[in-house]
Length: 178
Image (tube, rainbow, N blue to C red; front, side, top):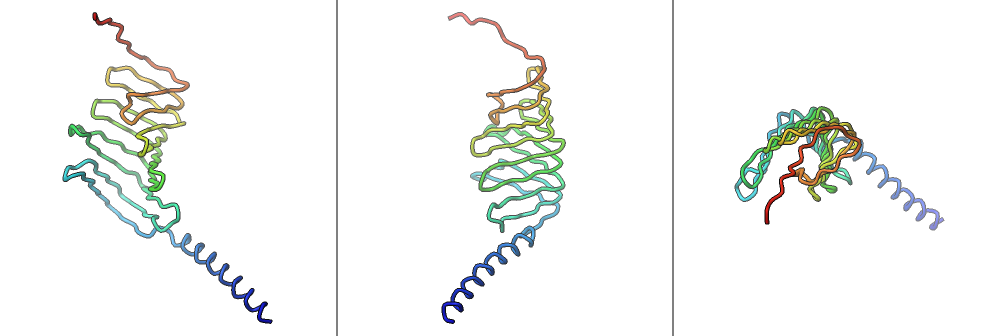
């Protein structure tokens, strides 16, 4: 009888923990914000400004994330104080993975006049890389452009790899004398 009681107690303990995890998941976000205007600084210098009508904070989940269901706009400044802007209809930021997923009418305008329009854009913050497997249009600062199905690029667009695209590229074929 004692063995049966011990087994029952341990079985109940396991079920209780499972139910606790399910309850946490059912709770939804741990915090909600509306009319959010977050400013990020580094050494007292403004480096980014995130604005969104709605912010949902799911940091209470094992794989924590922040969701922007009503879209967002992010303005960010490089070390020279030059501003770039990205907007989208929806966004999600996975904190542990340092990955941002932007969806719907994604528009990126860089400080040097590059304009990107895409259905979806991923930003790997750790590796400073942007990519998509969705249709996109991009216009570079020299007037060249690309319409394609997917691309990978460094976040400064100096290393741009496009797949299945059409466009016009300008090539400087002047040869410098040594």
